[in-house]
Image 1 (spheres, rainbow, N blue to C red):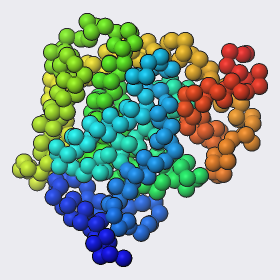
Image 2 (image 1 turned 135 degrees about the vertical axis):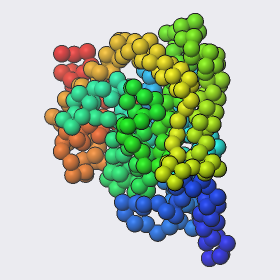
Image 3 (image 1 turned 45 degrees about the vertical axis):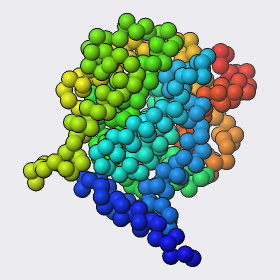
Length: 356
């Protein structure tokens, strides 16, 4: 085999030595759950990115709700387009801060693989039904560790798995400080990029749907972040990069100092205000609508039916050595919106949506 071909990965790893001293090098990864021979052409994080893009759970994201269930327009954000926006924003930030862009991209592409049908309405229902509770970030890790490849999982690196598990944030702080501490700066970038993406595209979707008008947007948001979608994203990303410049390694630090990601106080306050505004005016309003209630009924009927008829679960779920309840939750969580509707409609009359 040609020697140049065999040296591609080594050349890519050498290029990573130019990154920030605080970036993660793929050759320094903590490794995989199962040891594998290295690729001659790709770094470990590039392999993870490719495995995620080619997995079934990633494809299903195109038919999973972000916020608006069964929208009439094709221009509303889906879970897949949200994921791609997060990856784009995260890569821009990571590149500007001289972090490992491949690791950042892999985490961003995999962060929502475990999200339910019907968005956070579906997540809330499964959290109520599951004996162990349900959080989509934990399910995303379960997807890549176990559920893909008929129980074999994708065998991703520790750094990508850590970023996927710890991307989720509490409602009180858009930076996610003190909640699910992520082990790499690249994972931290994805954590923030997730918020930057959704507070902007969810606002645009609410305007598109007529749920909000431009005059409803808080004055502070417009004054600090900008009047348009692109202005707001540019303000947030630029502010994050400038405020976090020590991450690049180009700025001297005290030996005891550890560089951190953050935003200036004014921009952080305005972006938190925009998120709070969306929770009050969009997310809570959507969760009270008729389609959301139909979604809740659908998931509850599916759960009850498959608990009683576990023999009808697909083989890829039945081969896993877990409880019936866990298998049912895994199956429902993996469904797309339309598939969940169709399966619910195919149930016997006593289990159908709209029946008692």
